[in-house]
Length: 489
Image 1 (cartoon, rainbow, N blue to C red):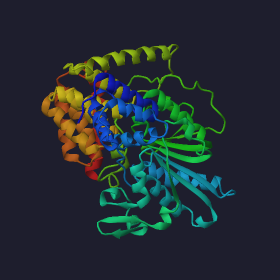
Image 2 (image 1 turned 30 degrees about the horizontal axis):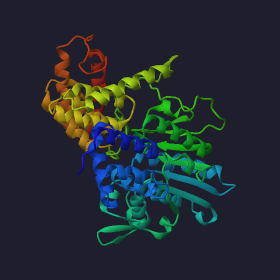
Image 3 (image 1 turned 60 degrees about the horizontal axis):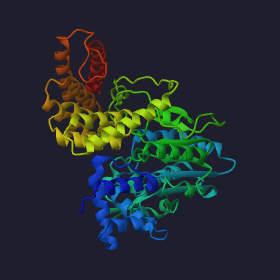
Image 4 (image 1 turned 90 degrees about the vertical axis):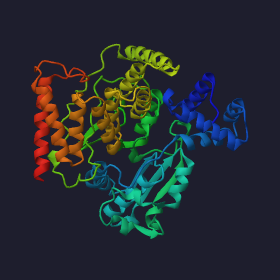
């Protein structure tokens, strides 16, 4: 693999930001270098300047960008991913849309960032189940992605067993047929979905995506840098009909990015809705958010979630209330971003100061930019493999991204690195409750209780962002109640 010089890396990074909206911080530099090497090999060129020339060519540029995107976007997905969101779709959102559109008999649904098609086909299955008179309706389900290889797989409609890990009982046999070691989507379902290539960062390509009743854009915005992300959210808003619904991933940016939407709370998830009348908000301004620790998600995406009592799935982690941005917040945010770029440059220049990389990771985690936080934390842990705060934050970030097994491993590494790191034990207890592991949760909570008994209530918990021992004790009580309910279930 050819190593890019610093100017080449920054130039290619800028190209990916401006042409695809994708952010590549320093820890992801090897990914960008590997993608560039593969693209150059495919183009039979050896000089990096020739790669930039090809990218700037009017005719060749889109194809060359495709080569890079193919290597740099990972479309991990599966059918009915994030069950609380699909429960909201099936029980409330789609029935409401069907009732509202009954006179027109017309539905417009869009899976933006569909990857290999599982999300769009899951939508199609729900529509078939909810519309017994489907042939009398005009239903459009659009599925778009920037990765043409992923779209090619979606068009074939063949999936392995791993894609069905959250499929409700009986649905796989009803809507799929076995083809050797794979499962093929039923033609009637596949024909409901229209696949299209779309670069969400290209504002000139959105003209065909209007009057949508529902848009799913889940775990896509986390890959965008701030200005591209805000621009895409604005265009998603404008693509919806009044009172149309927008569903994003749990690890997407906080609600200040979606301030032009109404917020609707469903069990274990939040969904946004375009208001019937426009809301006056400043557009294309810098993204601001109150600084708060990353919140542990409340998704039920884990083994045993369906059998655990509802109360045992509630997350006792406190959430900071949303605050209105103060006067001058935009200027402060711009200053913070300038400082962030300086820190990134320092950390990227071969520095072994893992604390700088950790500060950057924490900033991105607080902003809800999970992919970037994950990238920087990997650099932290490469430089300091026994950093308990690094493993702890990585565990929270992985939970926010729905990777619960990896989060469990990260938190175990945290308490191995520092058995006295109390928040690591508390986070382990919380995660074990979510995973239905009551004995392990009780053991971890007992360790937290032993630590807290020797501290005064006003003391600050290390790495707790101001959390006091007294407040931690209150949280422990709630956690103990959840463990008890889980044990009795």
